[in-house]
Length: 230
Ligand SMILES: [Zn+2]
Ligand SMILES: [Zn+2]
Image 1 (cartoon, rainbow, N blue to C red):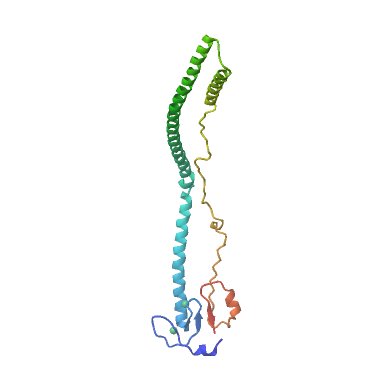
Image 2 (tube, rainbow, N blue to C red; image 1 turned 30 degrees about the vertical axis):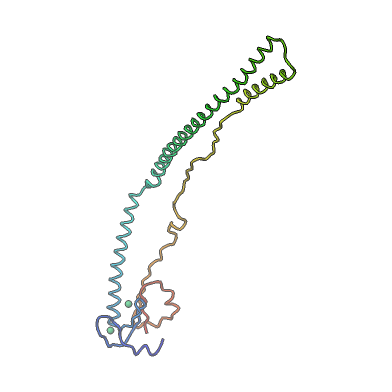
């Protein structure tokens, strides 16, 4: 120990004490005389008892909470409600899309129907013209090679036109998924389970005038108040 320390005076709080220092309180790093050391130790003990009592109350309070806990609605109910909500919204969204596409199909059909009728009319006029010509030629029982070729061409064209109608189509291209739903969990974290054992409290009071304690032995003491005796 530092020999200068022995000449220090007591550093007790709240009053002036000129007495020689007897010990150092490691809890608050104050040098104290014998009387004030004892008072100080008593005070610390009272404070500690109060603190322990309030901690014990807190533990009791927490124990009561364990009696009333159950799996919360956040886990038990809300996700199912959310999934149902998603289902309703997805159905609604799908119905909207279907309605919109049905409208597009109808618009497309209207346009097609117009062209369909116009083209049919054109083809029919052409064909009727050919029919008129062939009726005349049959009556005359006479036709040139070119006329025969023209009539054949007219038949081919009409045939091609009618066949082409069968190749027209409108397709609905389905792309999936059109709507997504995911599940995300926030549950126990790996560190959330208490794994550190509580340190056992060990309160050591050293008697005054006991033989000097080495700093090594002090280091092993796991308490809150260590008194070094000189
Ligand atoms: Zn202290
Ligand atoms: Zn004192």
